[in-house]
Image (cartoon, rainbow, N blue to C red; front, top):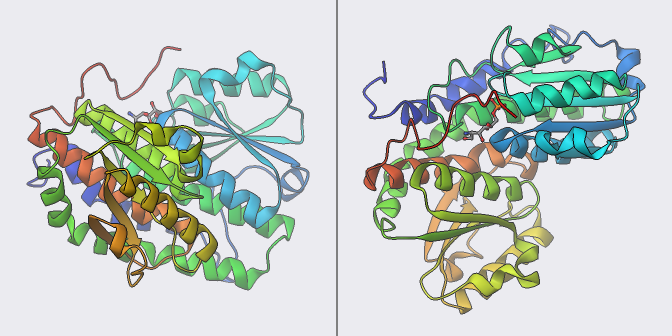
Length: 368
Ligand code: M6R
């Protein structure tokens, strides 16, 4: 049942090209317009949306952070992303023109469920992004985008996360189509880029051995930092969460621009720092990231850089380079997170931990 893999998690990491492809399947009409099966909100209702609030927990929250960048960029609708557990306790400002998007792989997370119940009492429309057909959160929502990851057994979310990202991009593009903020051919172009992602993810998976070799060098590590910018920032947070969950080591993700505002004080000789470098097309972002990498390296950090193929500007400052396929910055999380999943899975395995059932964690968190 694990298809020859030692863990469900490793199997699920390798299923990601298919999971992403399945989550993209059947989303376009023969005329090429985006179509979402269980949208159930009318075009007029969506046109009336003037604010989006995304609520989620853990890995799903990081998907929500990427969604914010995509929705705001393509639709110009303001987006807030909020931890579900905080949401209803702060008296959030909601009304009928607020679209609340709940992201939950399981569809049973209590914090997220209570948050959408609160949103509905305020007359907001709720759209669920969910991987589990008929679970409570989609049942209590006005609309659903189902992801097609298939069952995710490993407690640590992997293919669930990638397919949530796909659903978020689809939602952002759909809103852009309905609101007319982007032309059809632009939406088409992004859909083509998305449809190329399964192959790009497969390319990253094909170099898993290099990442495993790197993990082998880090079995004595007690602390790791992850840096990213833009859509790479949630990737850094997700990489750190995976390491905490599976390897039980201290790991923190930061927006690289924040380094100088505090976290750089943590850097000492030999500290591994994983850096998600923005694609070269985004030179301003990329160059700022390079200077962050230089700063930590000057203080003795061991830098492991996830870099777009063909971008050699980082090589002089990287102790290890991991190549990523060339993709647009907003879609980069779909490839950049994969080496971080492999790294955490392998490191935890080498440390002798149960990767599928990490201590103290449950797959569905059904209590607040
Ligand atoms: O089922 P959900 O997406 O609502 O779950 C949310 C979190 O509990 C979940 O992502 C958790 O952080 C995972 N263990 C991450 O690997």
